Length: 257
Image (cartoon, rainbow, N blue to C red; front, side):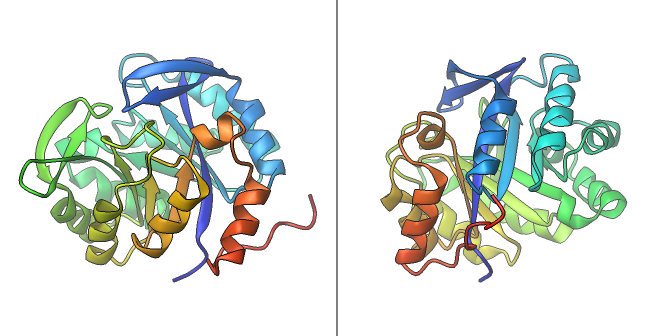
């Protein structure tokens, strides 16, 4: 296992940073760029922008946010939400993103995974999986912001995504997202054990113990955090020092900041 990456997840609606609960109800939090810069200054490893309603609106606002952040923040930026075509991907990469997270378009036309990986490199192609528990002890992939069934099994889809060229998986538990009661450890572990590419756990971080559990028991390669950071319940230096204290392989804080 390489370094456990600490990622700030910023959900965007128009010009605002928002905080959804189970990908549904929404609160406005502030200016996304200000938050991204703050997390960068605190030593975050990566920034993840998710456009909550990209499929319903034009992408101009998101492009402007990414352009602004890329001028001030010098860690990898991943952008997801409503990216439907290679043109969409190219546009957001030209704006300054390093990686793209694709969910709905990939479930509808899996070839886009290979196309993005071949054109821009597999490290750029993040397969975004929004997972919901089924009554049968497994998980189903949901699309369109966690609203629509896809009838795809999460673990099988993760394996297929890797075969098609995805370089990373962004795994969000729709059940746990915004609840702050911890990650779906079983889900993260099931996917982490099924693939060899890195898995980012997202959805459920409420306290430090949740990060420790998803890294140790869930075998996550990275942890995406939103609420605990946006509302100042934990800050990145504290998270990093606690992780190091518990023997997790996180990067030492950048000394230049």
